[in-house]
Amino acid sequence: MKKGESGITLISLVITIVVLFILAAVLVDASLQVAPSTEALNNLRNDFHNEQTETEEKINEMTNGWEDVIL
Image (cartoon, rainbow, N blue to C red):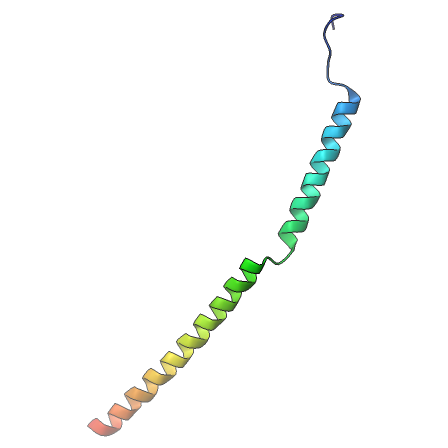
């Protein structure tokens, strides 16, 4: 290197690596926690399946009732 040039120093490299480790730790921690939006979506999915099952049961009851009337 020439006298006026400055290169990357070991300290700046270590600081950069530490910052990257901190950001990675925060990202992993955030991804492992159950987000409220995920929990809300699971509740909506369960509600939908429950309503679908109830609707199918009502349709089956109505169909069976009409078969008795027709026959």
